[in-house]
Image (cartoon, rainbow, N blue to C red; front, side, top):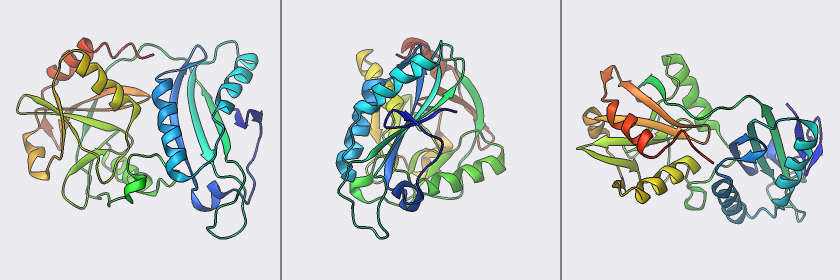
Length: 270
C-alpha cells in the first residue's frame, strides 16, 4: 500500500499530526481505473467544500501530482484511492495552526472491472446516529467513530451493509453508503439535513435519474415506513448498487432496482 504526503512517498505519520490527535481533517475514497479517478469532479468538489467548511488550507493539486508519481511506478494504476486532508502538525490544544494542510494519498492496487449489481441481505441497526453540527452535515470528516460502532453491529448480525436511523426516528443512510428506497411506486432517497454523508455516487445517480426523467423524492422517511419498503439499494463510490433482497428477513422486490441499474447504465461510471 503506497502512501504519499504532498506527492512524496512516506512510511509514517508525525506523532504531532492533528489527524491522529483530533481527527482534524476530511477524506474521500475513490475508485481509480487506468490512472483516472472515477467521478473525479464530484470527489474534488466535495473535498473543496469540506476544506472550506473546516477551514483547511489545502493545495489539492498535490492529488494530480501524486497520480503522476503512481503512473511512473505502476504499469496500470487500478484500484482504490483514499485521499486524506489533514491539518498537519500542531501544538497541544484545539487552536488552529497557521500552516497549510497536508494532502495524503493511499493507493490500494486492485484489478477493476465494470460495475455489477451486488445482492445482499440486510436489516435495520439498533444503534442510531445523533444530529451533527450544521456545518459538518454531509462532510466526510476524519472522525468516524459512529461508523466504526455501527459497522461492528452490522458485522455481528452478518450484514455486509445495514440501514441506519437517527435519534429523530428517521432513516438516514447505510453504514458506509447512501440508500435509495422504493415506496408507493416512487423512488426516494433520505433528505440529509441533520446528519449523513453527501455521497458522490448518490449525487451521480440523482443526476442520471433527472436526465432520464425518473422521479426521485428527497425527503424524510420515518421508522414506520420501513415495513412498507418495496425495494432498497445502497450505493457508494466503490459500488453503485448493493441490492437488498431481504430487509429484516422480509423479502423485497429486486426487479425495480435491476431495471434502474440498466436504465441508468450504472455499470459504466467514469
